[in-house]
Image (cartoon, rainbow, N blue to C red; front, top):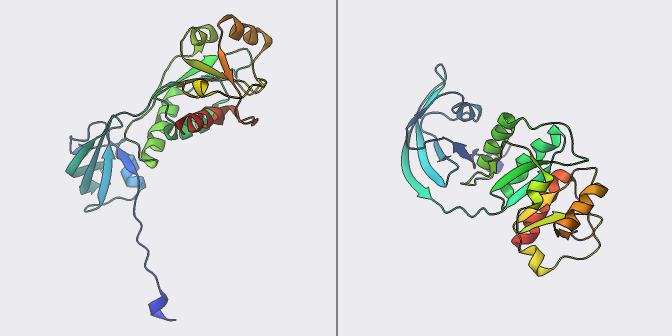
Length: 233
């Protein structure tokens, strides 16, 4: 074997680690569990975030596996403005799809998600504690400093339609999108079963703006992210 051809690969962790108060200097389980699962040890550098705009370059001083505690020292702290805007109103979908949606939510521009009860919505109510955990881990993986907010209350469709500056995604809508519609930040995504006839009448009563992007019928859990990517360009 030619040793000159052997390449040594060093694993570099490119993600943030969530700490509610990054200035505290020591954390315990369950917050510390992510550090141990990634096998961080004394002397390792890491990036911390409180997901409220603050990130810190830090180094691990002590990783106590027995007591599940992590001690660290901060080298520098950076504070960033919140670029998130708008709200994603999402008709209830099955829990497995709720989790997929929350996992990709940090890649959108939305600052908040609200689940909505609609005629064809899934009867499965959100497990907010589980969704919050998934959201935190996904935010860390995509290295965002701001976490979107999950409203822990399912609302009715009339409350959504009473809001201003909202656009409804509808695959039965034939018109193409306009520039004015693209500028709207709030998006209302229906369930997999689509909008009912009664809801279509409600859209007319509330004069709701509607849009159907590119002739593509997106899965309900992904449609909001597709809207975000379209309006970001």
